[in-house]
Image (cartoon, rainbow, N blue to C red; front, side):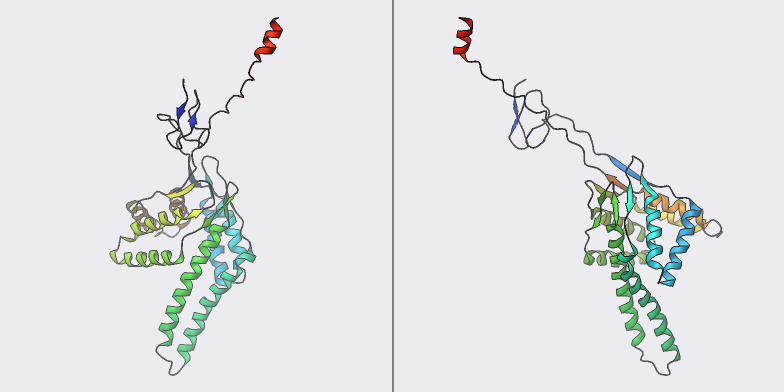
Length: 283
């Protein structure tokens, strides 16, 4: 089989080779194995998840122990979300890396309570104080939630690769406004939420492959309705919550890049025979 020209870079593909030794591109007509997809799944029990979420809420209420409880919760949760094909997630957050965010959160929450008490017991409060505080508080809570999301993803690793969220704050703010407006349509929020998740997962970097979100709007809407109906008896909350959260986790997938085989190394050139020495040997 004669040598051929690589259609990608113009280099030479050696005889009997299927891939270019320079760029790794395949010969025309060569089939390349597709990329591997890792479906994520939740391995935590219903009662384990429910109990730890109660502690998480308690930590946010008390503020002071929040950094330790948050790290304890997410370390357990991330380790409970693993890939079915062997991919491994790990959480590396520390209380020292999140205490500023939890402190600001406490100031916003208890600052609002103090302001409400002050307005209640003040004889003639200015009418613009409370609306202004609500606007500032909502904007601050949004920015705080954004940085918390970046902190959480930035302290997760997949198979040893540290992840990071590269999405911008301005675009996230636009998506949030669109999501808030979609609730006016009663059901449109489900499609906007799925689009938001697809955009966010597309901005997660650090691993060799890419993350995707596969759920559709009608799927999220249907399961949300079933979730609301399922928790009405109260005692079913842990199991219904685990069912819904496990389904949501399964919609996030990780796709590894396909391993492109390279051409075998070219054989070493054979030394040319010296006709003089050959003739002398024959003589």
